Image (cartoon, rainbow, N blue to C red; front, top):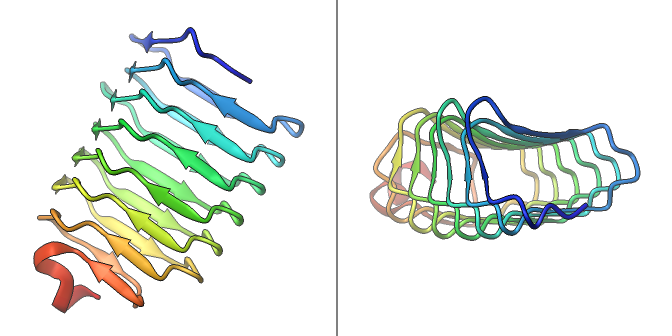
Length: 170
C-alpha cells in the first residue's frame, strides 16, 4: 500500500494499519507530520514500512510498530520528535532500527522482543521524558545513543555507545 500523497494528518486523525494478512509493504514517503498515533500491528506478511519524510508526531501522538511477523525493514529517516511513546515490539525478523535524526521523545522508548534485531541506532537522541527499555532482543549486539542525557535500561551488549552512560549502563 502506498500513501505517497498524504503529507499531513491533524486533529483527531491517526493512522492505524492492523490485521491485514496480505499486506507486504506500507509506504508513506510524503507524510511529514502526524497529530495523532501511528499504529502498525498484526500484519503477518508486512516486510517493509517506510515513512522517510516524517519529521514529527505531535498532539497526543505516538508510534507503535508491533507484532508484524515478517517485518525486516523500518525506515523513518527524518523523524525528529515524538510527543508520546515510541514502541517497536515483537517483530521477529526485524534486523535493525536506525533513526539518526530522532532528537526528542516526550514519552518512553520501548524496543523489546525483536529476536533478530542486531542494531539500534539513534545518534541524535538527546532527550527522553520517560524511560528507555531495550530488552529481550536476543541478537542485539549494538546500541548507539551517544547524545543521550536521560534514564536508560539496557540488557548486556557487545557494543554500546550511550555517551556519558556508556561505562555504567552497558
